Image (cartoon, rainbow, N blue to C red; front, side, top):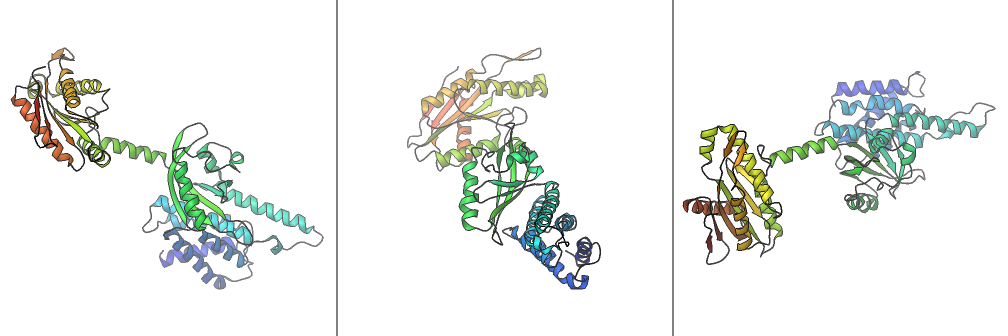
Length: 444
């Protein structure tokens, strides 16, 4: 932070710490300490790994200066939150917001446990126990006010994974009242598929080490059954003055970001005209099969090209041509529904079918037959009845160690052979034998 901005922040912090001007120490005496505390929070914001326990020590130091009024944490939040609002180099704004929230919650915890009731003066004649209870209640009310008005979800849990305290933002996120969340296990709302991983990250790593911070981005199931994505930073905080250790979690709902990412991921791997997979998705799937199919796993690939499609565009126009392509995609997809195959459009009038292991010459030849037969009937587009046919080049090969582009090229060569044989045909080659078996089909 620039020197001028830090000086301004420290001055404003002093003003909220000492609103009446009757502090036991002067600003000159406190300035260096406050400067050190601001520096500690700044360092805590960018620390890797992040550790919210820095805030505990800041809160304790503030109380040690004599600022033990229960309103100190709330007043400090208004000033110190500016550390993130101004932007933090190297951190996304959302990350800085979550971290400063975690630090300031810890500041409140550190201040609260250091501002002991015994430090308050007790008027003559007053019952000391009553005064201590009143002081504790007031501190609790002030801290609750700050806690509940934070714009991010905050939870404090024990090291067994039970929620001790939550704020309103977290309750709203889950859709359950605060009172019902206290004492709940953190796994009550975790998505069943994510529970084991959460347990490993939080308890096997964080609690066992009794230090550090982990970041989770996982699914939870809201009270109404809706599945949402949440991002949480969970910090292990060691107890002091005889208090138990606890876990401090700060997070936010990131469902919209996940949905956007999923939509972008889908768009990047699908053809806009037909909704089929595109070339990128096809190549990725071939690579995946190569990784899991094993040494003897064979796949089939059918390269489909429509016969004389240029004539359709020339005769009826590209608008009708696009509708024909969509109809062709639908017919081929429906004809392969029971095959468990991936159908992709590479562009123009070229389509590819990837057939998962196990396959052989007969099964891949059967798919090629199906693809050609699917287009036997004319396609109706408005008042036009358009006759479409296709030629298919097919290959059968062991997929492990084969580059996806090489597989496409081999199928394309078989397609060329089929078209040269008179169109509306298919041709097949087995690539992984010494004889390179070729097989042709006649007219359908």
